[in-house]
Length: 222
Image (cartoon, rainbow, N blue to C red; front, side, top):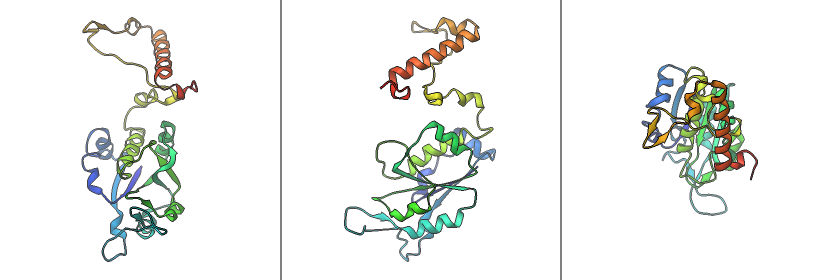
């Protein structure tokens, strides 16, 4: 997979994609991630990429030209263009699996007060990572890339993510490791039994219990 991130602040990404699973995925050529400063595409002699909004109002708005030209330069028939915005579709784990099947993602990070509405005409999808406002789309793009990259074939084992939280609308079951007893807290006996059927049933029950207590909305209980 190839991922191109359009941003005005490429320095923000230093370190984020140079550690852990994403770094290994890049090194093993499971994913190619490019950070593109769309300021480089502006025709403005002063390198401006924003302007005041028509009709008045606070803040500055990203203009069409640099973003249009940047997307047109890198887009192919395999590209899916994503705009990160609070008005986008709420991002879910199911969505991450769908994006992991794409060949090329182009992610546009908004900033300032917003972007010219006409930019939406070159976008395939609008995504929001939550009901809150960030200073820009950079952090949201990091969330998106991390959640998608770990699902790519060969990055981690399928068994490592098939029981993740939010799969089947459930939170993940609790897990334990050595020692068997710590500060008087014991590992549930069933996990030591060796009975895989009972262990699977226990984990399923605990997953449902945890989801009902913490996120009943996932079960439709609210």
